[in-house]
Length: 145
Ligand code: HEM
Image 1 (cartoon, rainbow, N blue to C red):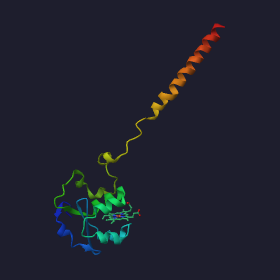
Image 2: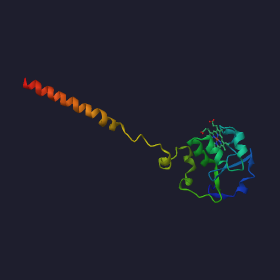
Image 3: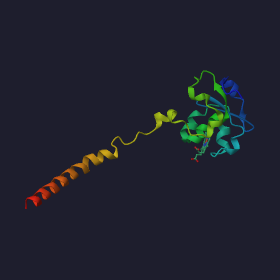
Image 4: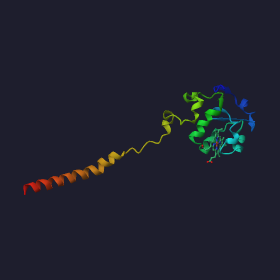
């Protein structure tokens, strides 16, 4: 099916039953009729959102990355006026794949800015320097004897 077809809200609205269930999420128009019974969150919530924009509810639940990738599988087009983004042309076969790192960059929590080797330099190295110095003094002292 052509996933780039444009729909208006009134074209989506009539598809609001369990047997014919369309939902809009983030500007994507999805035909989730075949998914209604499989939805881990229950079929009622999907049927309640059928024919409407359910972006807020979908985001509020905090759906997983896997759930977000599923959106691509059921996408049949876009809501009119929605700007098509680069990642919208992903191959549907790749919907099970994790979202590419590039796309997730903005969401990745950056690592602790103070890496482990800095801890080593800060705490262990001065200790090591003192130990070496004392050892050196001990050796030279021992040699003088
Ligand atoms: C149509 C697109 C949707 C898809 C593909 C989808 C997919 C999923 C998936 C895969 C899960 C399992 C948990 C996870 O992976 O996050 C899930 C859970 C759930 N979903 Fe959805 N969902 C959709 C829409 C919605 C909507 C519109 C609502 C609410 C109005 C909703 C409510 C829930 C709830 C309540 C759970 C259970 C969360 C839990 O047990 O912690 N889902 N959904």
